[in-house]
Length: 238
Image (tube, rainbow, N blue to C red; front, side, top):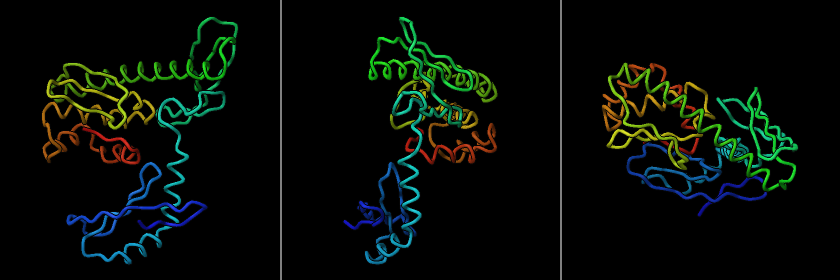
């Protein structure tokens, strides 16, 4: 397997030959690199192409590795950054003479935890509070947009479920249940709204055909710009 060399650790990349590919394409996802190329392109041509894009690849890989996690940060300690509504907000954790942990939001996340909790237990308590806060906001926002856009589209979901999906932002079941990822609260509000509209339109059109996208555009003419934020993340829509 070839590797693109930069830094101290070269990154190997698989090459996928696709008869549907019209040109070479580099994919950087979760810090991993892969290449899609037409069957007729020679291996040495592909390697030369990847080497010519070394700086671009390096920037992409580094940006993904340093990306602020969606929702709860990797470490729930004072000074950590929480991505919320498209903004990075500070998390402040205060050990206090209290029996249970609590969380307050005021342009930042303020958590108070019992002094008796050690580092790991304190972080776990703050993480639960943050996720609960995100779930509550996700449910409220989704309900508001579902009522507004659902009325205009003439549809109503059987239920809206807020979940902890790892690979999807949202989905719509055959029974009309819309499932949404609580991490959508990390996105700018117009992006979250787009996901709700996307799934509402699936109550009318189950596929992603032209009629489906016309329905989406009828509600959100700028949906492509909103969708662009999602495409930079390793999560999809169904």
